[in-house]
Image (tube, rainbow, N blue to C red):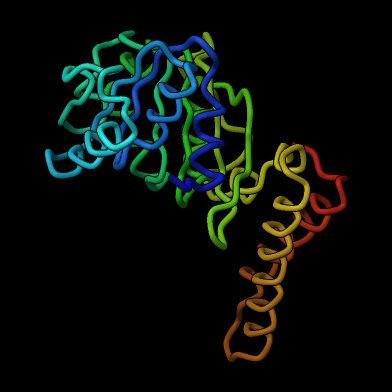
Length: 240
């Protein structure tokens, strides 16, 4: 079975010996790795429908690992509804959009805070997710970039702090949530590609605005500030 670097990176983000629940497990590849490698004593697999969950059941059957899990470890339901508060050490949510992950965590903040760690991999809107985590008292313990096809996927590990609410240092749409200074501490090549793609995108947008009619001065000023930050980040000089 050939798995992507993203799947391995998600599994490697779970601490050895921790139990986990994979929300939106799909084929159950991350739980399969955790069980096969003896990393986790128990992994609960949860998905929105019987059809979706059937793919995870098939993965465990095909890999000969079905005897290492119980029927109770496969659960159908929405978000964290299938997991009891504190039932596992870690919650894994990968492959969903940042807005969706926020909705899952925000549906029951007390339950979300009952787990020791969150391993989150947003497909998009990672800035929205980082903003939510910060404001609602989660500390980002680690960030990883992992390749999957042409994408550099972000994996965010968060741990609960004592804070219930924190005043954000800048607005939710600030580019520093999407491209934090910590990005430079991940895979250097992937980080550079990701930042340079955004720099190119902003330059193209600025060029289009210069050639269009109307007053775009406010937007161009905002984009110019974003560009300045990204250039500093790419050079390793940016800080939060």
